[in-house]
Each structure stands twice: as C-alpha cells, then as structure tokens.
Length: 113
Ligand SMILES: [Zn+2]
Image (cartoon, rainbow, N blue to C red; front, side):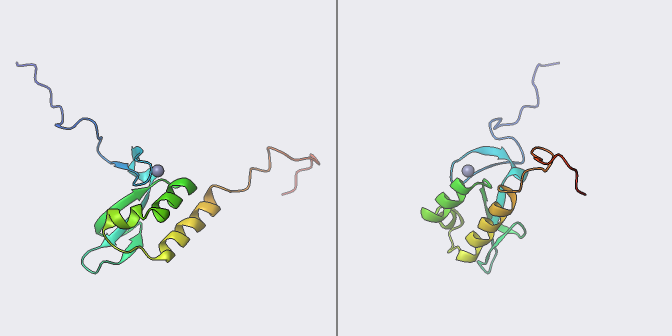
C-alpha cells in the first residue's frame, strides 16, 4: 500500500470557508453576511439567491469599508443600492448592540418577570 493520503489539492481554504471582502478574514461561511448579485438580472440582494456572491463580516468596520471603498460593488461587479447597506446596518444595530442580559446587573435585586 503506497502511503498516499487523500489530501485535497488546496488545503489552505477549507470547504465552506469564505473570505471577507473588507478585511480578508477567512471564516466559516455561516459567520458572514452573504450578498449576492442575482444572475442574470444583476439585482443585488442579501442571503438568498444564485449568482455572484460576496461575503462580509457582520461588523460595523467591515460594513463601512465595503461601502466607503465600494469593495462590495467591485467584488460583485455591480452597483450596490444603498438599501443593501441600510439593511445590513439595521442588522448590525439589532444584533451587536443587543441589550445586555438582565441577570448581569440588577440593582434592585428584585426579579420582575
Ligand atoms: Zn471583515
């Protein structure tokens, strides 16, 4: 038996890993926002759809960079409407700045359910 393993040709990028278009961080696909330019009508939308996709960290820094430097538009080779950035911004504010759990700081010590 020859000692040949079934190593993939490109072991650096693991399957289902993607790269952020802003900071170039590599992470599992579910960690990123997915922005996709649909084929063939060039509509840009989030999450779902078949076409050319770009991935972005769900952080304010990467969102701003993608918008300011048009990283997203260049990556998708399409104009990205402001509504895309607005929607991502809303997701950011609804997830990252989530209210801290009540159990951490409760000055009164009373539990109100
Ligand atoms: Zn990033």
